[in-house]
Image (cartoon, rainbow, N blue to C red; front, side):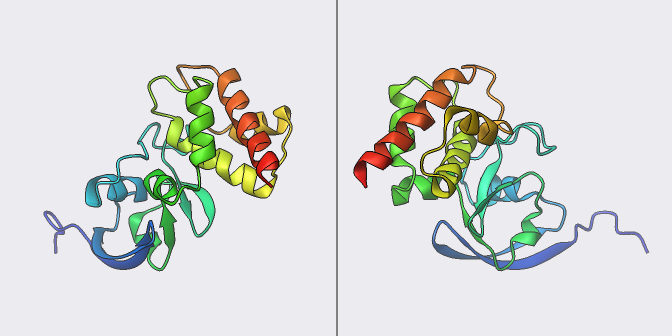
Length: 165
């Protein structure tokens, strides 16, 4: 029997940006493609599709993950946050303001992944030094700005958070 014209699907139930979602997804569809095309959450980008560039970064069950390396079907039962959710909650506001103030973005393609990765770093280590910031962001590629302004922005956001405590 041929499966030509038949695409296997899976039913999933998860939470995306605080909202419960039930969907039927193609079993071969990546998480980032489902978020972008199935849910219209286009903040996470598809770059290398090999987990190398970080453009597809999302938060799954509290940790950053590469959305291109996960299948949407694997999201069953997961709690997912995209840059849209992190923005709406205000969780990344200080980072976004610092990125803007330091001109740490140009085209913006890498920015959502950079911001989510930096937010995870600052949650784990509230006062990282510059080498640690560089290390944490090393899996996120930026082709426009270089990294000096991005590292400056993360350092500024960290310093701001320390002052606020």
